Image (cartoon, rainbow, N blue to C red; front, top):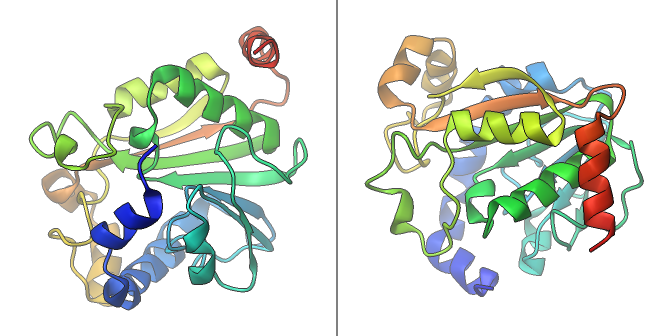
Length: 235
């Protein structure tokens, strides 16, 4: 495993956090809140420095990350869980309304690990709960995808959709091009301009390099979900 604390400190400048939080505050209030009721319980997988979970409005908030150092960046209303995303400690079955993850799935080592994350999301989600996943789309980033030392798993909007379906989710939304690759890219930094960008899907087609895929946990587990759970339990 990479040294996450060292890698994060090298890659992310703490001095840039206020600007990133301004961006995420608009992303949450002007877009992501449509998937997250105000009374929801939200889980942020690989929450990083809390840019999403600190800024989303929700009744109860959890952040999961393997890097214990991120706890100091999370607001007081966020419960931090220092554990793996495929083995979440402290959350019972069917206790979460929305699982959110951004720029995390590409860091998994294999499709088997990704299946484990999907299975754990199904476990903690309530019936009809959502998983909202955003990440770099390999289809539009083949020249930059591997510039990060801890990128292992290439994913497109289509492969992620198939992964969710085979895991047992019902896919509601697939957007191939949503946000630019990073906050250091062409995404405008002014809150008003960010809000305007979010209202102009045509601009997404020009600047967007990240997918957004939303799936829903069905009311009843499919045979495939039960099969995956049996395989996971058997080790």
